[in-house]
Image 1 (cartoon, rainbow over the protein chains, first blue to last red):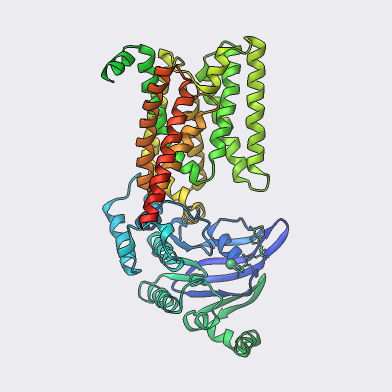
Image 2: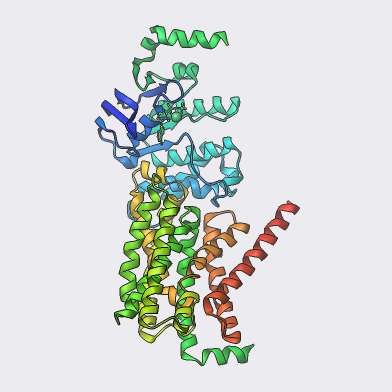
Length: 235
Length: 274
Ligand SMILES: Nc1ncnc2c1ncn2[C@@H]1O[C@H](COP(=O)(O)OP(=O)(O)OP(=O)(O)O)[C@@H](O)[C@H]1O
Ligand SMILES: [Mg+2]
């Protein structure tokens, strides 16, 4: 079942096109990795999908997916360094979209937040202030928040940036598990081609326009992919 | 001390000032946490100056001050919010322009109609005598609405303050809650302005939040601490104002400043020990 279909999506800033005529489909259960160089429009595309920026052309259609069923982990979160907020306050704020207009979190949401913190191994720091955490810990807190927000689709923009190798491997493992055992559809922006190929069943390679979209197996056969793998082996 | 308090409470105007002041301090402190963290402090400042212009106009036209100021400042809240959300134009410069223009227009209206006198100083720096009985009713009504809405939307206000784009991306109408914050701020400012003074009311919004953030590290703690601190500073300020006949607003601000220094010192000591 198609969850999202993008057709000829173009997004720009001040007349400059950052995403040019990109089309792809996301099926339920997919693990789509979006790769491409810096500035190739990956984050812009994600923001377009989330409705944070309006596309100038093309259409993005959601099928059986409401805006409040999406979890999102931003590339950079512009949160002030001195923002007073505890880990549990941040995590449970992901449950907000399940409340509608109801004012307070119920026991259900509190349990949900607790479960996600347990899953990401941050239960013991739940009372700490978000601003006092390391970059990797902050990333896990934001992932727990994203998980609170969704059961269907997770959009992750470079989630492993700044994580140590152990944490990186753990996070990939975790996302793969969410995808396989809980059936959460994943769209991950990544610079790590190896794990993109290892975990993703589909690849979208962006160069402002679509350079490649298709299954991972097909991607491996392209010259572009071999070039990138080769280039990396040489350095 | 007891004697002083009974004397204080025997004046109807002091009781009125206390009732309105405590409620306004509470509202200002609650909203202030979000405004400071969202870097919207300038909006508070701008709104109070627009409020000053509106008050002056109301006086000149012989209309009820609050009934003119509330709609004018509410509209200004929308405008200032749009300006600061739109980063392409220099937000804070535009707000500064609007706020000093309103102040200037207000001063001109006042000096044209009644001349610069003690009233003008009261408007700018606050007066304990400002509240009439009907003002008190309206102010209490407005404050209760502000506090109720804040409590009901607390979780949403936290989410929008902490990370607006995540909140928007996951399906919450963040713009609506920004507008709510700006509107509640407008109401609070109008109600508190004559007692605190147009030039000083915005400090009621900024100080408690900043002071609390010196010591507390979670949002809830900061909100609660700000509320308590703000009310205590207000009451202390009004006593100071009564004893020495200082302008009310100025007295409250000085007490707030004192608390800020104390909290900062404790914060530094705590850090040094840890
Ligand atoms: N807010 C903005 N205003 C103007 N231009 C922008 C803005 N954000 C991004 N751009 C431009 O759009 C283009 C694509 O940026 P985008 O952030 O989507 O790239 P990316 O693929 O995510 O890069 P990276 O790998 O570095 O994260 C870049 O040329 C960038 O300069
Ligand atoms: Mg990016």
